[in-house]
Figure 1 (cartoon, helix red, strand yellow):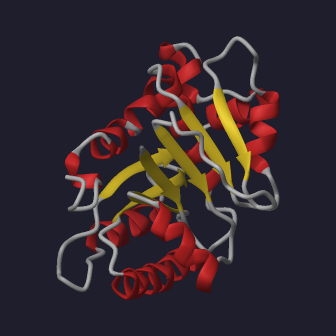
Figure 2: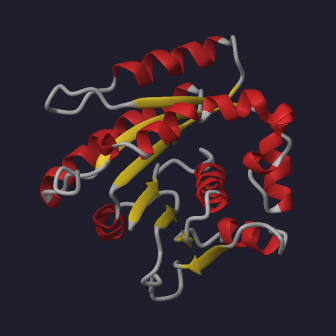
Figure 3: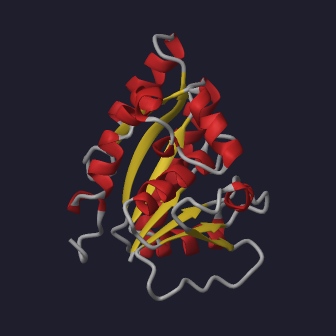
Amino acid sequence: MRSILLLNAKGGCGKTTVATNIAAYYALKGKKVVLADFDPQGSCMAWLEARPADRPRIRGLAAWHNTVRVPKNTEYLIIDSPAAIGGRPLAKLVQRADSILIPVLPSPIDIRAAEHFIGKLNALRRVLNTEVKLATMANRVRENTLAAEDLDDYLEMIKLPSGKKVPYLAMLRASQNYIRAAEEGLSIFEFAPARTLLDRECWTRVFRWLDSQRSLPALQS
């Protein structure tokens, strides 16, 4: 089972948007997908409630108040984490994951918060002795702005203590397609390709990384 964790201690960075679109992408490919919502706001569960019955099924787990029992036939577990997570709850989620995606918004406050959190996460990985793989994504970016350039530069230079670069996978546009998809319980991959072409192209490197051995812990690669 592949386990993909959306993580950032800063609220409002778009973890749920990324989680739901990843879940729908793999469901469209015929995979058995579970979306585990650890955020008490329950945004992923609300998205699933709005999801049309004729769409590929995604099973939801309201993990913030229930014991997490993932069905044995699950192929992809997508985990949406709460904001301001730390300590033992953070450690437990990190231990569940093969891959961690960290969405970051284009603002100085979000960039500083991400820098602090990634440092904290690297320290936790050493304590837990886990080989979970990290990657970053820029989210809700307005193209050709100074804020977008600053975020792009920052994410390109992040390195692990070993000196190895943290993969920077994508710059997702601040697109109305994501808003409409969230309202309808859909993903951008379920709209007409011509309408969402620019948004779909932004995801190419994300899924190339997730589907490669580079996103898996060494023991699984």
